Length: 149
Length: 149
DNA sequence: TTGATTCCCATAAAATCCCATGCTATACCA
DNA sequence: TGGTATAGCATGGGATTTTATGGGAATCAA
Image 1 (cartoon, rainbow over the protein chains, first blue to last red):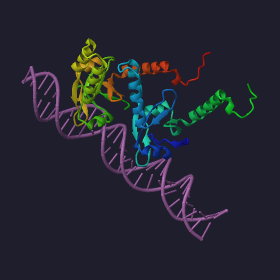
Image 2 (image 1 turned 120 degrees about the vertical axis):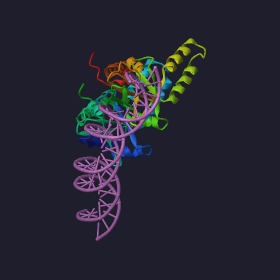
Image 3 (image 1 turned 90 degrees about the horizontal axis):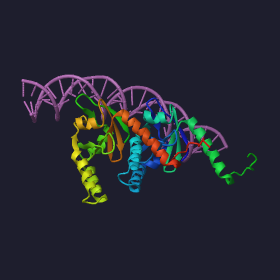
Image 4 (image 1 turned 60 degrees about the vertical axis):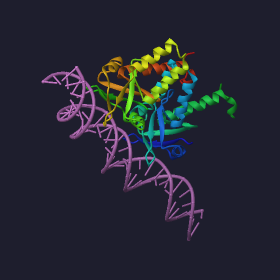
């Protein structure tokens, strides 16, 4: 999936890029979005994926554990269904937009079975950071001679 | 399922958020609420889920244990049905409101197949606590650069 | 009767739907 | 090859419907 920039209008509406939509549409007509735990962006996925995550949590821990309690609170307390209409738009909430610092434009970034929505400038920086990180950790990928330390 | 803040009026009435309602409505027009065992909040779910919870408790513990007895007594002794009217409101009892320290506003927090109702300030603190806790226990989730050396 | 609880209606605000428009990429034809 | 028609998409604006919430009437209980 490509990274795509779409406008966010005054009502908070964004078109879900059609590539993203068509993948989901086989299953349903809605996605689930929540604030990323680790980055200033929105994450989106299908409800199936979220259900699976919940089931994994339930199975991997003691049923009455504090940790499980915390995780389900965090995930389901934040996640919300976003049905998209016939023109393919969803309406993001204030909470999500604020977390991702999105005002009038949003970048969709594919991440396998989920995707992220970023403020365009933030994504630019993040992408640069990721590139630098990858090159640092895997120098064999870098076909340029290593001049700098 | 999101977290949603609604007002509690002088009669103790609260609107059950429509997202919550629509999920339940397929089955019935009422929910079951009880005081959380572990937190200063109200828990709510369908009657079906409560039955399942009871079965889980029985399976996960010695059938004759004092512990199981205590747990089932606590939960079922407390649980009460709350039908919601045509406008989607329920009327919470003094006992529940007091336990959750709720006066004039209540936040609904989704929790998978059940949900919790909190005093807004208490939830804010709880959410912060959970986020910190989860990030601490799962450092691999934390992609923030490690500045300290 | 009095106090409390339940039901019903009214309203404002917010969420949702629908249609119109312009753009872009692709296909098709000369 | 170049030019044009076409279909799909993103986007804007307005109309419609839902939802939350307040107040009051009706019902029930003590």
